[in-house]
Length: 88
Image (tube, rainbow, N blue to C red; front, side, top):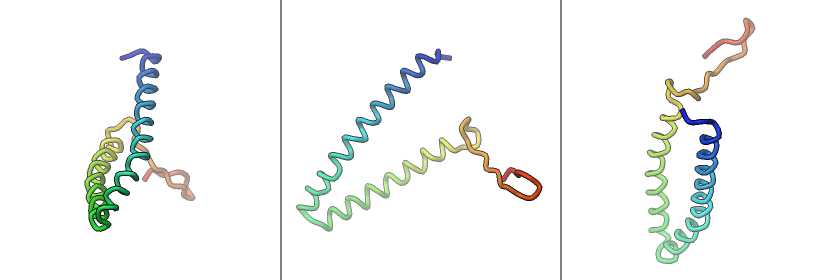
């Protein structure tokens, strides 16, 4: 196990790198689609559609990994009933 201060530093560094990637994508993505749209609107629509379809699979896989029953951060849902809280 790594000490908490080292883990904290690693998580902080990863967070800052992810923010940079996110900001870069938010700036370059619309520009790239605008350039493709300047060429052909139909091609731009197909590019957006295909990128969305491809990313859906990756996102599903990532969510399945995080939300797996063996995951340490899996969520247990409780419902409120007249008897009290019941696990779903």
